[in-house]
Image 1 (cartoon, one colour):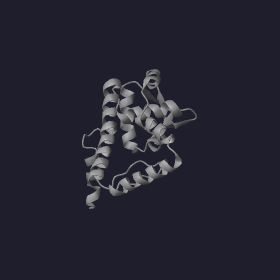
Image 2: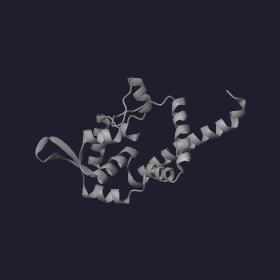
Image 3: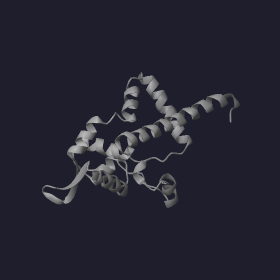
Image 4: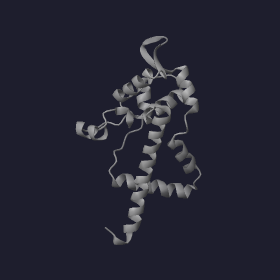
Amino acid sequence: MNPDNGILVQEMVDQVRRLVRTVYLDSLKMNKVFGLTGPQSTALRALHSCGPMSSAAMSKLLYVTPSNITGIIDRLEKKVYVHRVKKEGDRRVTLIVLTEAGQKLCECLPDPIEKKLIAGLNNLEPRQARTLAAALGQIIDFIKAPVVPEGSPLEFSSISEASEIDAAGDRDTH
């Protein structure tokens, strides 16, 4: 460890903690105000912007395992925000569709943190964006975050790894 970096390292770790805490508090607020988990609001937003889709398509779009997306859809269906309908012309396919209540809810949901982040990043000069992207890439490498191929849900190498991440037992809280 380079002793000259001690204060800077602590500041960077604190900033990462602040980011994680902000995401967590945003999720709590979403739950308190709208009764939704983060993944539930993301699923509703996806249906609102893309229209009806199969659970398989939603699973790929949201990087969620098929079993997780089923749980998310089940909970949204209980809240009467979505319903399942057979696809016209191919009754083997079931589409997830927003209900009127789901449509109204989507229209009053606040912007997700990701949208705010994207807006801020889009305002950076290209050189700043490249520097920040490289720095974030290094941070991800330091913590050995798994690479998730585009369009693939996150898969766990073991049951213990999944249960560490899903300790609450409610898969769609993440």
